[in-house]
Length: 246
Image (spheres, helix red, strand yellow):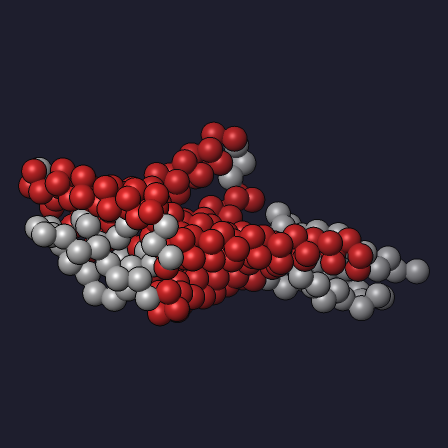
């Protein structure tokens, strides 16, 4: 009798192939994805409520940080030019092409289409949702006597911070199976953190966002991507029919 060979699911490489799980086990893992999403949503709601209710400690912290940050930027023209350049470079529309290029390069190298399309679709969804959240909260941007930069639209959450956090987190998760050493993984996580924090600082020092805006943006970007990945990773995958020969 000829032995039966089973093919792996299309679009999944051996790095991420996983054995079938029992329905109860899969349900528990999907529950973790839902809980991650809920926890992210609750954190955002708490910050948004504190913002809308003008909680004094938060308001004082926000205003002091923006005033001090703008004062430092105004006193150092080279720093101000660098901040404005960073703002332009990390606008979501400018990041899409390099991010998509990294995703397609990963696809070409590994042949893993589903993981690549998960990352790109999650990034685009996060971009759209962050813009929607701005319309829901409708927080005005900081108003300063001597601004160094201006920006249109609402302030909460910071779109730059949300999109940078979502894109860098998604890219790290995307390439994680290909990072074979601890040093490579630490470097990837550290690089994502540095880019995200630098973008958050940029927004505050230019006086176009409060610290609470950028914190909310980072929480949203990271939390949304992790919840999305947990759902993607443990979503039921169709298996080949028993008896299928290669």
